[in-house]
Amino acid sequence: MKTHLKLAALLLASNLAISQTFQDLPPELRLLILGQLRPYEILNYCMVSKAIKKLCDDNEDVLWKILVERDFNVKEKPTNMSWKNLYKDLYQFGQGVSLSAGQLHTCAIKSDGMARCWGQNATVPSDLGSVRSIGAGMENTCAIKANGMAQCFGNNSNGKSTVPPDLGPIKAISLGTFHTCAIKDDSMAQCWGRNAERQGTIPSDLGPIKAIATGTAQTCAIKANGMAQCWGANTNGQNAVPPDLGPIKAISIGYGYICGIKTDGMLRCWGDSVLGQDEIPADLGPIKAISINGLTTCAIKVNGMAHCWGDKAFGRTMVPLDLGPIKAISLGDYGACAIKVDGMAQCWGANHFGQLTVPPDLGPLKTSR
Image (cartoon, rainbow, N blue to C red; front, side):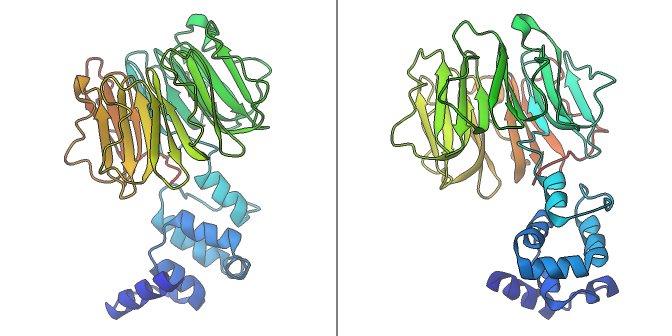
């Protein structure tokens, strides 16, 4: 809270205009607002701090008005609201993805929760409705609907778009080239589609997982203890997780190589490096997110700036100079797309199929941060 106090003092010294709504809040909540905390950070205080939670409860209506002013994701106060449920509903969509670049198309989740796709094979089913997460793959798309159920559409080679009838609600979904995997509500993995390299056969010792990633013929997961486990084709030894890797918080699969973000934010890659795709740039430092496609790697640095390296084909590594800080990034086969801090999408690369032409009426996207 010391940092927030300093920020509050600076803002007050600048004769910040304070509305009557703000004046109605107790001093402790004023400090959270003046500390320029983002809405999800304020909600986190309301959820985890007993002292602050009581203040949030007692000043619910006033605080709500301020949250609505600050975040387009916050629309209206739900009935029977609890700070914990609100935080989960607004900012923890499982492992929700709101922008995904595929082979020939790109999909996004608008601020109203509705899906929008563009490029080739970009038709969204009329019965899809509001979604929590979306993934664009090789001529197919999968989404997690508002009720947690998966729906896939587009190319169905190897049955990759045929959702198993016994899958049930899921937390996350990942599209490989020929197979699809999901994390069920009980945190167990389930895969379907091509299994010639056993990429869809869940290891018996895997147990509950926190994240899952799919590639051309491989699958990787982050177990409940944070440790990585990979299976499927192992042409470059990429399934052999380094014994000194330790716990990780994110994982992504490329052609013959795999990268994971360690708990300290540092990136570690292993497997093939024919184009330097798994050679970590010396100036990268800690990162917040990673996306891999083919032989290209992109990361979001702690300052929000994108950094891409590896295969330079199609201009995927040429991050636009005007991009600025971003919230999310997704590499497709011919380009890359990112969500900027204002929620707007921007794409770059080879726009052969119109997949990088962001619809002018798309508007801000739904983001979990």
